[in-house]
Length: 447
Image 1 (cartoon, rainbow, N blue to C red):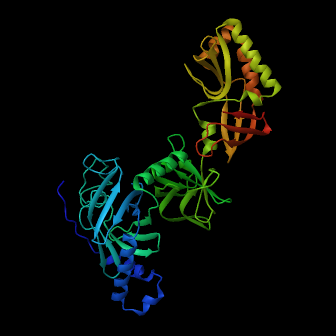
Image 2 (image 1 turned 60 degrees about the vertical axis):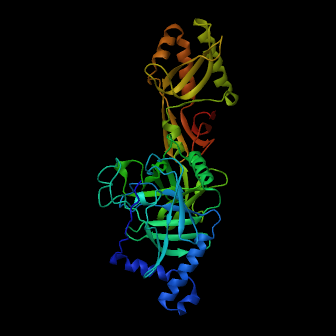
Image 3 (image 1 turned 90 degrees about the vertical axis):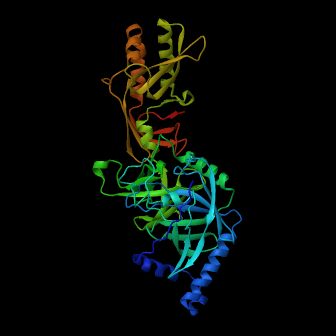
């Protein structure tokens, strides 16, 4: 690819931010120096810091669109004293067929001493420069990326502050906050570890999350994609707040582009708690956990009820259903009673009987009767069943030959009427859990 020389645009509007940056370096000895000498020393200190990182740096990069159009990106950088930087990433906007593939590219960098210190990448780098390229080149909507504007990414950054482990930058033109944090492992290992943790608390099933400080509860809606809403209600019609945010995922959790708050508590980065039940903010005051209880109430999967914790009445009903099934078809037996979505024609969500063939014990079929499951408040589920609820075609066919199967199934469903405190087996991606009856109903377990 032909290399393009990019020219930094110095904006007068950035002068206040540049002046602010020089005031945020907390080295009292240097305030006795002239501004020019102080910036010279800061430049030397920052360069020595950048060059001295054995594993280089993770650049947590963001584009500065008013409404988050892009997630945060993990870029990697290793600096040397000869002004060479080697960068790497597997981000989805890499060109020349490299999108999503681990790629490295080298170029030069400079420490510019202006009204404040600027870390500049003025020569094309395949990893970084696509974000600041003003020429639209891919299939993004034209209102997001267009010629002359590009992705609102920067390639020159004002140094706002630094310490031994991080450098806080701000884009010189578009002003997104970008953070360099010292990498503690190999780059490809960092990518793999980040993906492993992301999979641990996000997938296509759950993408909405509680954000709570114990007295207030808001939501991150759509967190899985890295660009999401921070809202006071998942119901769009009831929202009074819906801020657009972006985050970058890490091997320990995720970090927002900028600090935000819930009540009097602030948060910027969340890390996984030791017990894996939630992610916690820096001071532990704000927690993030999946809306698993809503998922339990609305999921379309089928979870089996654990027969080992059946009551005597439930066990008797299970055996009676099995006996009635075998009266009209000796080739089949009742495998389980579960909650979720039945299969076949005219499916229902509710109580589902699963049968298997006695010969192979592998081929299965289901029959279901409907009931309603709703989340009443955090961690609480209500099951409502009436005899008028519908059934699927399989239950209808069985009832013609063995009507007591449906009768016993409805009796079983009626036992579940009530409100439950739910303890999931995973607070982010549950596949079951304990349902403890607190108002009617019968305690049971899904697996």
